[in-house]
Amino acid sequence: IDKLQRGKFDVMLSDPIYPCSEALAEKLNIPLVYTLRFSIANTLERMCGQIPAPPSFVPGTMSKLTDKMSFTERIKNMLFYLSQDALAIRWPTSYCEMMGKADIWLIRTYWDFEFPRPFLPNFKYVGGLHCSPAKPLPKVRLSFY
Picture (tube, rainbow, N blue to C red):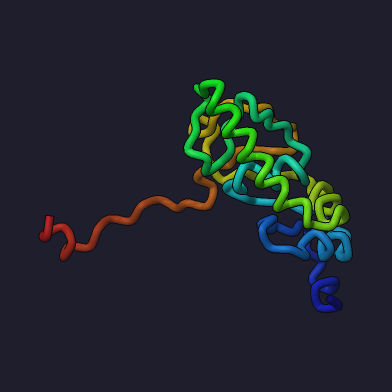
């Protein structure tokens, strides 16, 4: 911890799947920035980030549903959300409270690939941020094609 404090970092970039970054950012007194693709049924975003995701029209991630749900599919979606919430209830309240203190959540996808849903100002889409320009194929591969 002393070595990290001497480093005088400006910000902590973390994935919310891995615990303890919240506590470390608080200990170092620096802003916390989460970067994630998604969590199953948007559980982390909903329960810890306080982002609204009404199951009536926002399909749970990995549920194979779309935003054009029938009544039966809406019930399935609600059950999917409830099952993920039941698993998340085992987290201590302080864990979600600490995650909720993140200054910004960077979502690693493009908004046009997502279903419409409400977002808070501290959630930003940054799709492609982690990608670099493509390099040309080696000549060996080009001759194969």
